[in-house]
Length: 256
Image (cartoon, rainbow, N blue to C red):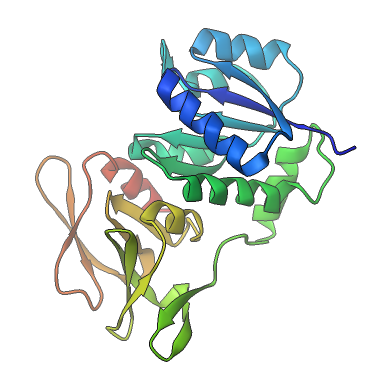
């Protein structure tokens, strides 16, 4: 019999916890067990005293602090999917064991994509204490799990768009607009959050709640008000403005 997945959920809000558990159950069925903690103190105690988990789902702002306060106090190798309302912590999340980062209010589809990423990275290998070390080795050898091209529907059929040729991505209702280097516009039926999780993080950055930019097509950066920045993107007439919440992480990302 296949071993049940063991999951730790770090979430202080009961409605958010119930929603997340429902989405996980929809995807995994009954093939998992879980532990739920709401505070930094309980999270530290659980990770120090409990058996190793296969996967952690973590909100960032929780009772008595943040989930980073937990992870800074405990040595462990479990991959983490962050489920949060705050996009300014993206870079820090991936400096921990983070493998995916989905923003509230997220959808079932976005949660499914995050778990699929976990399965792609880890399900082919037996789970053991060195699993996160294996993940780092995958990154070091550039074994990419990110999309190299996207399939978009056209009148004449499905067209493949190389992600390296995408300058800007914008949320537009239930779909996203893709602007390419040839000044052409494409539409893809995915949410911005789900699409962002599929793109190489060294090339793409979500600069505000509705726009993702490609680092190779940022022509100019200028200061704006309230810790925001103007970005001039190749082949795009309108300037893009960073959210004040992500500007600091964006500056760091530019230099990586």
